[in-house]
Image (cartoon, rainbow, N blue to C red; front, top):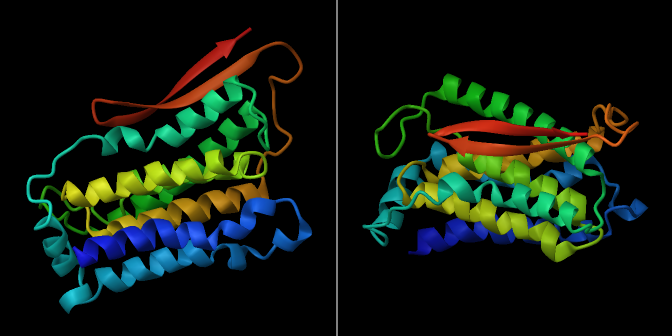
Length: 246
């Protein structure tokens, strides 16, 4: 049980503590270096790597064994859906005109860029490392794709609403953290997979918002047309739903 509590503290409390100074996002004080803003995701990735390549009490096998013995009959597929809650929350807030940093198109643009970059990195690492999942089902364990995608979406939500609605901004991390926890409890991922996945998702999205790629590109802002994009998950496959309204 101690290992499970350690897992929760590292993945959620550490992040919230490390990000608390972003409440004044637009002030010069908080326009700090990318390295400074990356302390928390780097810590997550570093902790995950230590666990992944350690033996003994902090090794991934021992942590997994001690966690699962406290939840022997745990089984849920909620982790396949919870990762989308931050994005659903963001678009719902847009519908209700909650003030955000960017318009819906720019939100979607940055979400797509961060999501694609994150997927390429995550899949690339999976291909290189070929780590076996704890349940032995395949060798795509490291890092956790569910968790990295969940933290991409949560970090987009954070960037968009941290100035106007901090509670809403931070809410995504609750669902992203729960997604990672469920991946471990379902015995689909090691703790190390989830920590590294979370760190990758955060740092990739922070980089996108810092660089603001295609910042002024919006082919739909000249008329009354509106493009709505949202992620989908069907038959164990991720996709993107697009709706162009004139």
